[in-house]
Amino acid sequence: MSQAQKRILMAKTGLDGHWRGPTIVARALRDAGFEVIMIGMASTDDILSAAVDEDVDLVGLNIGGHIDVAKRAIALVQSTRPDLPIFAGGTIPPHAAKDLEALGVEVYPPGSQLSEIVDAAERLTGRK
Amino acid sequence: MTNDLPSQITALLKRAGEEDRPALARLLSLLERETAAEAIIRRELDSAPEKSPFVVGFTGAPGAGKSSLINALLPDACGSGSRVAVLAVDPSSPISGGALLGDRVRMQGHSQGQNVFIRSMASRGDSGGLTRITETAIRLLAHGGWDHVLVETLGIGQVELDIVNLATTVVVVLTPGWGDSFQANKAGLTEVGDVFVINKADKEGLNQTRVDLQDSLALLSTPLSPKIAETVATTGQGVSELWQIIQNQTAAMTDAGLIDQRRSLRGRKLAEKALLRHIESQAKDFLTTEEGGVVLEDISQGKVTFEEAIHHVVTKL
Image (cartoon, rainbow over all chains, first blue to last red; front, side, top):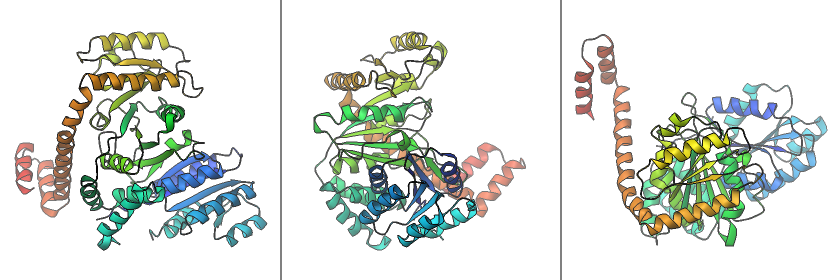
Protein backbone atom coordinates (compact mmCIF):
# COMPACT_ATOMS: atom_id res chain seq x y z
CA MET A 1 0.00 0.00 0.00
CA SER A 2 1.30 3.44 -0.67
CA GLN A 3 0.55 6.66 1.14
CA ALA A 4 0.47 9.06 -1.71
CA GLN A 5 0.79 12.49 -0.11
CA LYS A 6 2.57 14.54 -2.72
CA ARG A 7 5.18 17.10 -1.65
CA ILE A 8 5.39 20.65 -3.00
CA LEU A 9 8.19 23.17 -2.43
CA MET A 10 7.03 26.79 -2.16
CA ALA A 11 9.69 29.46 -2.48
CA LYS A 12 9.95 33.17 -3.14
CA THR A 13 12.66 34.42 -5.41
CA GLY A 14 14.23 37.81 -5.17
CA LEU A 15 13.90 40.37 -2.41
CA ASP A 16 10.21 41.09 -2.68
CA GLY A 17 8.51 40.81 0.69
CA HIS A 18 4.95 39.96 -0.28
CA TRP A 19 4.06 36.96 1.85
CA ARG A 20 0.29 36.94 1.60
CA GLY A 21 0.03 35.33 -1.83
CA PRO A 22 2.29 32.31 -1.32
CA THR A 23 0.92 31.78 2.20
CA ILE A 24 -2.66 31.60 0.94
CA VAL A 25 -1.69 29.32 -1.93
CA ALA A 26 0.25 27.07 0.47
CA ARG A 27 -2.75 26.92 2.78
CA ALA A 28 -5.08 25.96 -0.08
CA LEU A 29 -2.66 23.20 -1.15
CA ARG A 30 -2.45 21.93 2.44
CA ASP A 31 -6.23 21.83 2.64
CA ALA A 32 -6.23 19.83 -0.60
CA GLY A 33 -4.05 17.22 1.13
CA PHE A 34 -0.59 18.21 -0.11
CA GLU A 35 2.50 18.44 2.06
CA VAL A 36 3.83 21.92 1.41
CA ILE A 37 7.40 22.75 2.32
CA MET A 38 7.77 26.49 2.80
CA ILE A 39 11.22 28.01 2.51
CA GLY A 40 10.21 31.63 2.23
CA MET A 41 12.50 34.11 0.53
CA ALA A 42 15.35 32.03 -0.81
CA SER A 43 18.50 32.25 -2.88
CA THR A 44 18.65 30.18 -6.06
CA ASP A 45 21.09 27.79 -4.32
CA ASP A 46 18.74 27.37 -1.39
CA ILE A 47 15.87 26.59 -3.77
CA LEU A 48 17.96 23.94 -5.52
CA SER A 49 19.17 22.24 -2.35
CA ALA A 50 15.64 22.23 -0.92
CA ALA A 51 14.23 20.71 -4.14
CA VAL A 52 16.86 17.95 -4.02
CA ASP A 53 16.97 17.16 -0.27
CA GLU A 54 13.19 17.30 0.12
CA ASP A 55 12.66 15.19 -3.03
CA VAL A 56 9.56 17.20 -3.90
CA ASP A 57 7.07 16.39 -6.68
CA LEU A 58 6.50 20.00 -7.72
CA VAL A 59 8.12 23.41 -7.20
CA GLY A 60 6.03 26.55 -6.80
CA LEU A 61 7.86 29.84 -7.28
CA ASN A 62 6.44 33.14 -6.15
CA ILE A 63 8.09 35.69 -8.35
CA GLY A 64 8.18 39.29 -7.20
CA GLY A 65 9.29 41.08 -10.33
CA HIS A 66 12.83 39.68 -10.47
CA ILE A 67 12.34 37.52 -13.53
CA ASP A 68 16.06 36.96 -14.12
CA VAL A 69 16.56 35.56 -10.62
CA ALA A 70 13.58 33.27 -11.18
CA LYS A 71 15.03 32.12 -14.50
CA ARG A 72 18.33 31.27 -12.81
CA ALA A 73 16.48 29.21 -10.17
CA ILE A 74 14.50 27.42 -12.88
CA ALA A 75 17.66 26.63 -14.87
CA LEU A 76 19.39 25.24 -11.76
CA VAL A 77 16.44 23.03 -10.81
CA GLN A 78 15.92 21.81 -14.38
CA SER A 79 19.59 20.96 -14.85
CA THR A 80 19.57 18.82 -11.70
CA ARG A 81 16.08 17.34 -11.88
CA PRO A 82 14.80 17.68 -15.47
CA ASP A 83 11.65 15.67 -14.60
CA LEU A 84 10.50 18.07 -11.87
CA PRO A 85 7.52 20.27 -12.83
CA ILE A 86 7.55 23.95 -11.85
CA PHE A 87 4.72 26.44 -11.62
CA ALA A 88 4.89 30.11 -10.83
CA GLY A 89 2.76 32.96 -9.57
CA GLY A 90 3.18 36.56 -8.44
CA THR A 91 3.55 39.83 -10.27
CA ILE A 92 4.68 38.53 -13.64
CA PRO A 93 4.25 40.82 -16.66
CA PRO A 94 2.77 39.12 -19.77
CA HIS A 95 6.00 39.18 -21.80
CA ALA A 96 7.89 37.57 -18.90
CA ALA A 97 5.14 34.96 -18.54
CA LYS A 98 5.77 33.97 -22.15
CA ASP A 99 9.49 33.54 -21.40
CA LEU A 100 8.73 31.33 -18.41
CA GLU A 101 6.23 29.26 -20.37
CA ALA A 102 8.88 28.70 -23.03
CA LEU A 103 10.97 27.10 -20.25
CA GLY A 104 8.12 24.69 -19.49
CA VAL A 105 6.90 26.60 -16.41
CA GLU A 106 3.13 27.04 -15.93
CA VAL A 107 2.26 30.60 -14.93
CA TYR A 108 -0.64 31.65 -12.67
CA PRO A 109 -0.75 35.45 -12.63
CA PRO A 110 -2.69 37.60 -10.13
CA GLY A 111 -6.40 36.93 -10.55
CA SER A 112 -5.96 33.17 -10.85
CA GLN A 113 -8.47 31.17 -8.83
CA LEU A 114 -7.16 29.06 -5.95
CA SER A 115 -9.10 26.12 -7.37
CA GLU A 116 -7.22 26.52 -10.67
CA ILE A 117 -3.90 26.39 -8.81
CA VAL A 118 -4.95 23.32 -6.79
CA ASP A 119 -6.10 21.61 -10.01
CA ALA A 120 -2.74 22.39 -11.60
CA ALA A 121 -0.91 20.94 -8.58
CA GLU A 122 -2.96 17.76 -8.84
CA ARG A 123 -2.29 17.42 -12.53
CA LEU A 124 1.43 18.28 -12.34
CA THR A 125 2.10 15.86 -9.45
CA GLY A 126 0.15 13.12 -11.20
CA ARG A 127 -2.42 12.91 -8.44
CA LYS A 128 -5.21 13.32 -10.95
CA MET B 1 7.30 0.48 -9.62
CA THR B 2 6.26 -1.36 -6.46
CA ASN B 3 7.13 -4.72 -8.04
CA ASP B 4 10.85 -4.08 -8.23
CA LEU B 5 10.94 -2.08 -4.99
CA PRO B 6 13.66 -4.30 -3.42
CA SER B 7 16.07 -3.88 -6.35
CA GLN B 8 15.29 -0.18 -6.56
CA ILE B 9 16.11 0.18 -2.84
CA THR B 10 19.33 -1.83 -3.16
CA ALA B 11 20.54 0.42 -5.98
CA LEU B 12 19.61 3.59 -4.11
CA LEU B 13 21.29 2.39 -0.90
CA LYS B 14 24.51 1.78 -2.80
CA ARG B 15 24.43 5.31 -4.23
CA ALA B 16 23.40 6.87 -0.90
CA GLY B 17 26.34 5.09 0.77
CA GLU B 18 28.59 6.97 -1.66
CA GLU B 19 27.17 10.26 -0.36
CA ASP B 20 24.77 10.74 -3.28
CA ARG B 21 22.19 13.23 -1.94
CA PRO B 22 19.38 12.68 -4.47
CA ALA B 23 19.54 8.92 -3.79
CA LEU B 24 19.27 9.51 -0.04
CA ALA B 25 16.39 11.95 -0.60
CA ARG B 26 14.55 9.40 -2.75
CA LEU B 27 15.03 6.66 -0.14
CA LEU B 28 13.47 8.91 2.51
CA SER B 29 10.49 9.44 0.18
CA LEU B 30 10.08 5.70 -0.44
CA LEU B 31 10.23 5.16 3.30
CA GLU B 32 7.39 7.63 3.78
CA ARG B 33 5.29 6.52 0.83
CA GLU B 34 5.63 2.78 0.40
CA THR B 35 4.55 0.71 3.36
CA ALA B 36 6.71 -2.19 2.16
CA ALA B 37 9.87 -0.06 1.92
CA GLU B 38 10.68 0.18 5.62
CA ALA B 39 11.15 -3.55 6.18
CA ILE B 40 13.33 -3.86 3.06
CA ILE B 41 15.51 -0.89 4.03
CA ARG B 42 15.94 -2.15 7.59
CA ARG B 43 16.88 -5.63 6.40
CA GLU B 44 19.53 -4.23 4.06
CA LEU B 45 20.91 -1.85 6.68
CA ASP B 46 21.06 -4.70 9.21
CA SER B 47 23.56 -6.49 6.99
CA ALA B 48 25.74 -3.39 6.53
CA PRO B 49 28.31 -2.22 9.11
CA GLU B 50 26.45 -0.38 11.86
CA LYS B 51 26.95 3.35 12.13
CA SER B 52 25.89 5.26 15.23
CA PRO B 53 25.39 8.92 14.50
CA PHE B 54 25.24 11.49 17.28
CA VAL B 55 21.50 12.20 17.47
CA VAL B 56 20.37 15.34 19.27
CA GLY B 57 16.62 15.72 19.77
CA PHE B 58 15.04 19.16 20.19
CA THR B 59 11.61 19.38 21.74
CA GLY B 60 9.48 22.10 23.32
CA ALA B 61 6.38 24.21 22.83
CA PRO B 62 5.38 25.70 19.45
CA GLY B 63 7.18 28.98 18.88
CA ALA B 64 9.89 28.34 21.48
CA GLY B 65 12.45 28.70 18.70
CA LYS B 66 13.50 25.12 17.99
CA SER B 67 14.03 25.69 14.24
CA SER B 68 15.89 28.97 14.77
CA LEU B 69 18.08 27.36 17.40
CA ILE B 70 18.98 24.42 15.17
CA ASN B 71 19.75 26.87 12.39
CA ALA B 72 22.02 28.88 14.68
CA LEU B 73 23.76 25.71 15.91
CA LEU B 74 24.59 24.40 12.42
CA PRO B 75 27.97 26.20 12.03
CA ASP B 76 29.16 24.83 15.39
CA ALA B 77 27.75 21.38 14.69
CA CYS B 78 29.60 21.35 11.34
CA GLY B 79 32.86 22.32 13.09
CA SER B 80 35.87 20.05 12.43
CA GLY B 81 34.30 18.88 9.17
CA SER B 82 31.28 17.01 10.53
CA ARG B 83 28.37 16.44 8.17
CA VAL B 84 25.10 17.44 9.81
CA ALA B 85 21.58 16.34 8.87
CA VAL B 86 18.40 17.90 10.21
CA LEU B 87 15.04 16.09 10.40
CA ALA B 88 12.28 18.61 11.07
CA VAL B 89 8.83 17.24 11.90
CA ASP B 90 5.66 19.32 11.62
CA PRO B 91 2.04 18.20 12.07
CA SER B 92 -0.24 16.79 9.36
CA SER B 93 -3.79 18.03 9.25
CA PRO B 94 -6.08 15.33 10.65
CA ILE B 95 -8.76 16.63 8.26
CA SER B 96 -7.09 16.91 4.84
CA GLY B 97 -3.95 14.86 5.50
CA GLY B 98 -1.99 17.79 4.11
CA ALA B 99 0.67 19.72 5.98
CA LEU B 100 2.50 23.04 6.01
CA LEU B 101 6.13 22.26 6.73
CA GLY B 102 7.62 25.60 7.72
CA ASP B 103 10.71 24.77 9.77
CA ARG B 104 12.94 25.32 6.77
CA VAL B 105 11.94 28.99 6.59
CA ARG B 106 14.21 29.50 9.61
CA MET B 107 17.02 27.40 8.16
CA GLN B 108 18.33 29.34 5.16
CA GLY B 109 21.76 29.99 3.78
CA HIS B 110 23.40 26.61 4.33
CA SER B 111 23.21 25.41 0.74
CA GLN B 112 26.71 26.66 -0.09
CA GLY B 113 28.18 24.20 2.36
CA GLN B 114 27.72 20.62 1.21
CA ASN B 115 27.83 19.57 4.88
CA VAL B 116 24.20 20.25 5.75
CA PHE B 117 21.20 18.16 4.71
CA ILE B 118 17.74 19.30 5.80
CA ARG B 119 14.60 17.21 5.44
CA SER B 120 11.09 18.26 6.48
CA MET B 121 8.63 15.56 7.47
CA ALA B 122 4.92 15.56 8.21
CA SER B 123 3.78 13.57 11.24
CA ARG B 124 1.13 11.76 9.14
CA GLY B 125 -1.07 11.06 12.11
CA ASP B 126 1.53 9.45 14.33
CA SER B 127 1.36 10.33 18.01
CA GLY B 128 4.54 10.87 19.96
CA GLY B 129 5.82 14.06 18.37
CA LEU B 130 7.68 12.35 15.52
CA THR B 131 6.72 10.25 12.50
CA ARG B 132 6.34 6.51 12.18
CA ILE B 133 9.55 6.19 10.23
CA THR B 134 11.89 8.52 12.16
CA GLU B 135 14.15 5.78 13.50
CA THR B 136 14.69 4.22 10.09
CA ALA B 137 15.21 7.70 8.61
CA ILE B 138 18.01 8.31 11.13
CA ARG B 139 19.63 5.00 10.15
CA LEU B 140 19.41 5.99 6.48
CA LEU B 141 21.09 9.32 7.19
CA ALA B 142 23.87 7.52 9.06
CA HIS B 143 24.27 5.21 6.08
CA GLY B 144 24.55 8.29 3.85
CA GLY B 145 27.54 9.47 5.88
CA TRP B 146 25.87 12.09 8.05
CA ASP B 147 27.72 12.19 11.40
CA HIS B 148 25.27 14.24 13.43
CA VAL B 149 21.47 14.16 13.14
CA LEU B 150 19.51 17.00 14.72
CA VAL B 151 15.85 16.00 15.12
CA GLU B 152 13.19 18.64 15.68
CA THR B 153 9.93 17.25 17.09
CA LEU B 154 6.47 18.74 16.68
CA GLY B 155 5.93 21.86 18.72
CA ILE B 156 4.19 20.11 21.55
CA GLY B 157 5.58 18.28 24.44
CA GLN B 158 3.90 17.30 27.62
CA VAL B 159 3.34 13.67 26.72
CA GLU B 160 4.56 13.34 23.14
CA LEU B 161 8.09 12.37 23.97
CA ASP B 162 9.10 9.57 21.62
CA ILE B 163 12.30 11.50 20.95
CA VAL B 164 13.67 10.12 24.22
CA ASN B 165 13.82 6.67 22.64
CA LEU B 166 15.72 7.84 19.56
CA ALA B 167 18.11 10.58 20.61
CA THR B 168 21.56 10.29 22.13
CA THR B 169 20.88 13.56 23.92
CA VAL B 170 17.59 15.41 24.42
CA VAL B 171 17.43 19.21 24.41
CA VAL B 172 14.28 20.85 25.76
CA VAL B 173 13.68 24.38 24.49
CA LEU B 174 11.77 26.79 26.75
CA THR B 175 11.22 30.55 26.79
CA PRO B 176 10.97 33.18 29.53
CA GLY B 177 7.46 33.36 30.90
CA TRP B 178 6.91 29.78 29.80
CA GLY B 179 5.11 29.01 33.04
CA ASP B 180 5.43 29.23 36.76
CA SER B 181 6.89 26.68 39.14
CA PHE B 182 3.76 24.55 38.79
CA GLN B 183 4.38 24.11 35.07
CA ALA B 184 8.00 23.28 35.78
CA ASN B 185 6.95 20.55 38.19
CA LYS B 186 4.33 18.92 35.99
CA ALA B 187 5.23 15.56 34.56
CA GLY B 188 6.60 15.38 31.05
CA LEU B 189 9.13 17.77 29.59
CA THR B 190 11.16 18.46 32.69
CA GLU B 191 11.67 14.74 33.23
CA VAL B 192 13.24 14.00 29.86
CA GLY B 193 15.72 16.78 29.08
CA ASP B 194 19.46 16.25 29.28
CA VAL B 195 19.98 19.92 28.46
CA PHE B 196 17.43 22.70 28.97
CA VAL B 197 17.68 25.86 26.91
CA ILE B 198 15.93 29.06 27.81
CA ASN B 199 15.76 30.62 24.35
CA LYS B 200 14.70 34.23 23.72
CA ALA B 201 16.76 35.02 26.83
CA ASP B 202 16.51 38.74 26.01
CA LYS B 203 12.80 38.66 26.88
CA GLU B 204 11.29 39.64 30.19
CA GLY B 205 10.93 36.92 32.80
CA LEU B 206 14.27 35.19 32.26
CA ASN B 207 15.30 35.20 35.93
CA GLN B 208 12.02 33.79 37.19
CA THR B 209 12.01 31.05 34.54
CA ARG B 210 15.60 30.12 35.41
CA VAL B 211 14.79 29.90 39.13
CA ASP B 212 11.62 27.83 38.54
CA LEU B 213 13.48 25.48 36.25
CA GLN B 214 16.43 25.10 38.64
CA ASP B 215 14.07 24.36 41.52
CA SER B 216 12.21 21.77 39.51
CA LEU B 217 15.34 20.06 38.21
CA ALA B 218 16.88 19.99 41.69
CA LEU B 219 14.17 17.55 42.77
CA LEU B 220 14.83 15.08 39.95
CA SER B 221 16.23 11.75 41.03
CA THR B 222 18.26 11.24 37.85
CA PRO B 223 21.87 10.07 38.21
CA LEU B 224 23.18 13.08 36.31
CA SER B 225 21.62 16.49 36.69
CA PRO B 226 20.56 18.22 33.46
CA LYS B 227 22.37 21.38 32.36
CA ILE B 228 20.73 24.74 31.70
CA ALA B 229 21.74 27.06 28.85
CA GLU B 230 20.48 30.48 27.80
CA THR B 231 20.35 31.61 24.18
CA VAL B 232 19.00 34.19 21.76
CA ALA B 233 18.87 32.08 18.60
CA THR B 234 18.18 35.01 16.28
CA THR B 235 21.36 36.88 17.32
CA GLY B 236 23.50 33.84 18.02
CA GLN B 237 23.98 34.78 21.67
CA GLY B 238 24.93 31.74 23.77
CA VAL B 239 24.66 29.37 20.81
CA SER B 240 28.28 28.17 20.66
CA GLU B 241 28.19 27.70 24.42
CA LEU B 242 25.03 25.60 24.02
CA TRP B 243 26.72 23.26 21.51
CA GLN B 244 29.63 22.90 23.96
CA ILE B 245 27.21 22.12 26.81
CA ILE B 246 25.43 19.51 24.68
CA GLN B 247 28.74 17.81 23.91
CA ASN B 248 29.99 17.96 27.51
CA GLN B 249 26.74 16.59 28.85
CA THR B 250 26.81 13.77 26.29
CA ALA B 251 30.37 12.92 27.33
CA ALA B 252 29.32 12.88 31.00
CA MET B 253 26.34 10.66 30.17
CA THR B 254 28.58 8.29 28.23
CA ASP B 255 31.00 8.06 31.17
CA ALA B 256 28.12 7.33 33.52
CA GLY B 257 26.93 4.51 31.23
CA LEU B 258 23.65 6.29 30.55
CA ILE B 259 23.98 6.34 26.77
CA ASP B 260 24.50 2.57 26.61
CA GLN B 261 21.60 2.06 28.96
CA ARG B 262 19.35 4.17 26.75
CA ARG B 263 20.50 2.34 23.63
CA SER B 264 19.75 -1.07 25.10
CA LEU B 265 16.22 0.03 26.04
CA ARG B 266 15.62 1.45 22.57
CA GLY B 267 14.91 -1.79 20.71
CA ARG B 268 12.35 -2.81 23.26
CA LYS B 269 10.58 0.57 23.27
CA LEU B 270 10.46 0.74 19.48
CA ALA B 271 9.10 -2.79 19.22
CA GLU B 272 6.43 -1.95 21.79
CA LYS B 273 5.41 1.15 19.85
CA ALA B 274 5.29 -0.76 16.55
CA LEU B 275 3.14 -3.48 18.09
CA LEU B 276 0.67 -1.01 19.62
CA ARG B 277 0.50 0.92 16.36
CA HIS B 278 -0.31 -2.30 14.50
CA ILE B 279 -3.06 -3.27 16.93
CA GLU B 280 -4.54 0.24 16.77
CA SER B 281 -4.66 0.18 12.98
CA GLN B 282 -6.29 -3.26 13.00
CA ALA B 283 -8.90 -2.02 15.47
CA LYS B 284 -9.56 1.04 13.29
CA ASP B 285 -9.93 -1.19 10.23
CA PHE B 286 -12.41 -3.41 12.07
CA LEU B 287 -14.50 -0.42 13.14
CA THR B 288 -14.91 0.62 9.50
CA THR B 289 -16.39 -2.79 8.58
CA GLU B 290 -20.13 -3.44 8.70
CA GLU B 291 -19.73 -5.59 11.81
CA GLY B 292 -17.68 -2.86 13.48
CA GLY B 293 -20.39 -0.33 12.61
CA VAL B 294 -22.97 -2.51 14.32
CA VAL B 295 -20.83 -2.65 17.48
CA LEU B 296 -20.53 1.15 17.57
CA GLU B 297 -24.26 1.54 16.96
CA ASP B 298 -25.09 -0.94 19.73
CA ILE B 299 -22.94 1.02 22.18
CA SER B 300 -24.53 4.32 21.25
CA GLN B 301 -28.03 2.85 21.74
CA GLY B 302 -27.04 1.34 25.07
CA LYS B 303 -27.65 -2.25 23.91
CA VAL B 304 -24.20 -3.31 25.08
CA THR B 305 -21.79 -1.86 27.64
CA PHE B 306 -18.36 -0.50 26.76
CA GLU B 307 -16.76 -3.50 28.45
CA GLU B 308 -18.80 -5.99 26.43
CA ALA B 309 -18.07 -4.16 23.20
CA ILE B 310 -14.33 -3.97 23.91
CA HIS B 311 -14.26 -7.68 24.71
CA HIS B 312 -16.05 -8.42 21.44
CA VAL B 313 -13.75 -6.22 19.33
CA VAL B 314 -10.56 -7.61 20.85
CA THR B 315 -11.55 -11.16 19.91
CA LYS B 316 -11.92 -9.97 16.28
CA LEU B 317 -8.34 -8.67 15.91
